[in-house]
Amino acid sequence: MFKTDDNVIKACMFISGLIFFVYGCIMMFNYDYMIDRYPTFEDNLTTEFFLNWFGAVNFVAYVGILYMGFKGLERAFFAYALPVVLLQLIWVAMSLQLSGGENYTGLYAWIILFVLLAIARFRAGYPLAIEKAGTPFGVTDKTTQIMGYIAIAAVLFNVVSYFIYPGGFIEQSPLLESNPQSEHSVLGITMINIAILIALVYQFRAGLSGVLVSMSAVAGTMFFCAMLVGSVTFPDGGNPLLAFFIVLNFIVFLTIFFRNQSNF
Image (cartoon, rainbow, N blue to C red; front, side, top):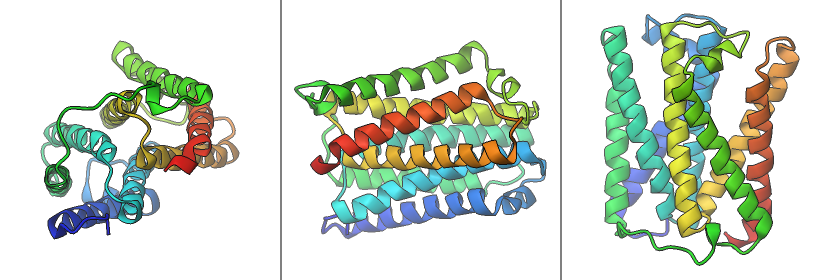
């Protein structure tokens, strides 16, 4: 498992994967449980939308750990996982402050998760310096390089857009209600985008990572399928800009995956 004899690393990664899996399943398939545990959560479409989004992010991280369980640890995974968990830890702490501290289970879970991933990363012995690849994204395939640049530009656009106009995402989504909880959820999504941007820049410098490319392909497919279901269920409630980026990410990440999967 994870192609290592270090049982501490195995235990840390297994427990981390379990936490990601449990949170992903609860948020995507049993969001009523989250609403019951957090009294300030309103039982409406807006809450379900954001819980499903965060659940998908957790499930994709679990897919990455599952991938490495068979293929072996990859340093690039930690370049994404540690920032995203740390940023979400900060976001959860902010949530508790805004809500008056109604439930600390999530905060404790993210603290444990960050510690486990940090232990696994440093016991794996990866150096702090990042060795630069000879070409952008470590490939000579121009299509892959172009898709990589597009991915970085798209994520950067979303991050910058939030800081310029935080309420734009909700205003452009007819079915979403604007309230302090939903506005804070958009901040959480922005923090996830920052971690994704870090992972993309890491790959630009160090080369493509099999686990990150596979995770991106899974994420792109999940959100694309969710968009198709949503367009049928709520034909008049879509966000055109969000739909554009979902389709763009689907094309970009699947192209990178299929053009490079033989290298992983």
